Image 1 (cartoon, rainbow, N blue to C red):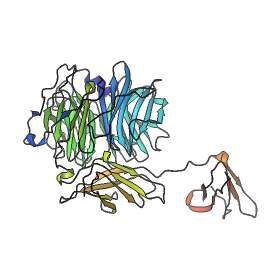
Image 2: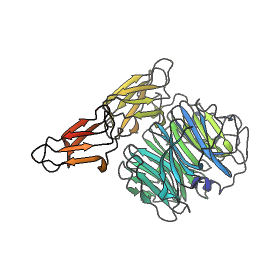
Image 3: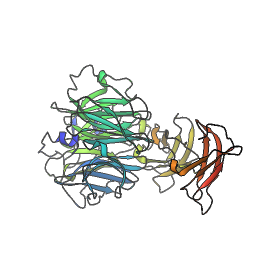
Image 4: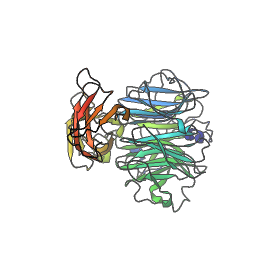
Length: 526
């Protein structure tokens, strides 16, 4: 299995958590009583011993996945905000699942096929999966996490020997892939990656921390130099990260020293010192998420850490299982419509809808995360759409351009509804980013959430074998294009100048080709 699973198994935990109903603070905090959440154990209809190592939420669905010893990995889903779950099922043709995220309206999963190929799968509902890419050149690697900005898809992981980390990305929505970064031998794999609105951030074992030099994720700069004093953070292994509420939170552990590690940055790692990182609680932290103005991290011995002030202070608690099975630990956590759901060893699922009225930035308005937003950038002139879930009646949603001031659209949640769809005239032809806020009735506007969107869908370019150019003497040149369908529009531009249109034509009904007469016969046609 992937690195984090192997790392955790170095510490055999054979005790169970210590609370049946309620919480016991395990880490002192001045506001622990107000910060701790109430958790309930969810017992799936079909209980198994699969370790649920990943969870994600989107399209009103939770998807959790994990490994079952000596058997193919399993997937389970919930359509009611984590209250009930489907029976755990394998995906035919795949034996391991190593990464899972909800991005741009889809679930993205990295799976290992029965023939040991890494494959990127996508799904809108968590049950039907489609192959998006096959990594035939990366059979000796595994991938732990994925992030996306428009057409830029970035995967992080490591070599099969777990000696070094690797970054692989595509700048054309998954059509082609290239290696962008390999870390030094001995540094271990990279475990987590997120997009921060204008650049990516990744983290892994042995203090590994990088930021991309731009929004494509094709080149990277290490942030290792900021660790001037490692005495209090010896052997930091980062496991999971989230960027929300204009704050980056990275969770992990101190190898062989005990206690969870949390790194926070309110400025996208622009200014860093050892004060940005702290020891939280007494156990390793494996996963972190954000929702309803609250950051939640989960880890070993069912330890849960909670922050309601953008990660400045944390309170921890431990939750006892009413049905303990072997070594209880929590691997991952996600926020749904109105509840946090944490998953762990032996099929463990914990749920908390004790989110109160907290919100992004402390405004009191309903808080949303990227998993609540689906952006659809349609081909012009069709209007684009922004769908936001997890809302309350009378919430006002505003969509701004990337500058955070130009209003693109606004709407109000109707009675009896918890979601809203807005029509935006045009987000733009290329991939980009918008900012979204929520204003609840009688409350100030929330902080603006940054959400990226894909470029408009593009028609595949014609191949050279389908194009015939005739360079006539004294009469207009012609371009004939075949293998088309009725209604296709073909445009011919001047070479080196995509603004100068030389001719255009539309395929007639019943035809599969079109011939275009060019208005300019000078050299330099394209």
